[in-house]
Amino acid sequence: MNTLIGAAGKIALIWTLLLALSSGGAGAASLEPVAAGFEKPIFVTSDPGDPNRLLVVERRGTIQLIENGAVKPFADLSGPVSAQGEGGLLSVALAPDFAASGRLFVFYTGPQEENPDIHVAELVASGSGAPLSSLRDLLTIPHPDHDNHYGGQLQFGPEGNLFVSTGDGGGGNDVEQNAQDLGSPLGKILRLDPDPGEALAYTVPAGNPFAATPGADPAIWSYGLRNPFRFSFDRLGGDLWIGDVGQDTREEIDFAAAPGLGAGANYGWSCREGFVAGPASDPLCGTAGPFVDPIFDYANPPGCAVIGGYVSRAPALAELYGRYLYADLCVGEIRSFAPAAPLPTDRGEGIHVESLHSFGEDSCGRLYAVSGDGPVYRLRGTEVAGCGTVLPSPPLAASFVGIRAIRRKVPRNKRTLITVWVSPCKGRPGDPVTLWRGRRKMGSRRLDRVCTARFRPRITRRSGFRATVRADETYVAAISRKLTVKPRQRARTG
Image (cartoon, rainbow, N blue to C red; front, side, top):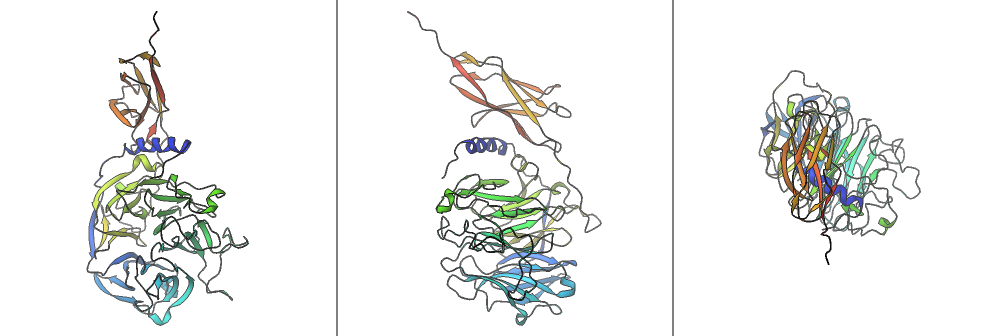
């Protein structure tokens, strides 16, 4: 496993302590089966104009329509689709004007069985289905050497263009050295205008950051990604969230705020993996950067592949509103965090989905979870009126933790008095504060009426102490500076 160096190591330690403050399962939502019996479903979305018409994507190349409780075929691309390795039909995005144009876009691999290429293509619906005869390729990306790391997500951005995620080309350590290469469309987020141009099946939107860079693929929006299998846009603010599957150290979630949406951002692979150093197999790692750090990462194992989700904007999910939902393929637990303070507010939601392959969101903002074993579930909370209602998320207030010792040097095996105080104090008397010696939790105390707490640790060796407070509904979690206390050297005699 790679280790952090310099200041990054200190940051990792702080995040380790803050992560320990995470609350347990919130029990904020439950699962409601929508339909079952699908064959290796891998994505779900809805008609932009009718949230009760759901499209379920199956890896083999078929799309099923759920309408009025009935499941019926919508499209069959099993001919050109190859599901070799991690490939197949991986996602679908319906055009914002779908009601008028009938256009939808598919991400699939094929048709060759051995290391199939990536295809982004258009279908046009007619009635209650989209015939294969309407298939029109927009983009074909060669993927000749491996059958993994395809990426696989299509989403329309808030400005109306089509965003596409691609993996680094497969293998280990970015062996093909694609992610940092602006000449390759692999290991990237691409941005297209799917309307045909005179020379291409799509056009390059104004504002693409590398459109004028010699040798660069003009469709590239951001780069330095390993396998961004799922990404999404916050339906309220338009921010971009990317779940990038890690290798054997960290799983990461990247964030790009609207309106910029990370144009030109380099997320670091293979020079970085999450917050730590990556395998750096690419010679470009010597000169690449600056890198955009993830907003959140976690260890792999026990995880194996992050499944990026959505910021919940469903008013029915009151306890989840404004929180980002994600999961891991090998764990299956749905988790969430508050975007203002991801690591300290990360928590399990008490919901488990076996073989969870994807989240989905309908045009009403309701969220779904897709099991690769067949069922599709809706996350259910307290039903409220007004399907499209979105509410603003209240920001969490900043928090400060101070720490001091009555003596910084004490006789060996004696105790010192450490005082911790927290600010702001309003509403916090009685809240717990925790003292840490290195990575070891020493104990917790309740804040008194002026928001202070006292600890008396025994000093046997040079020790670094920090104090932490958990996040709550008002304040972000916080951690103090490091306080060093040393045993006093005995005076020499004779």
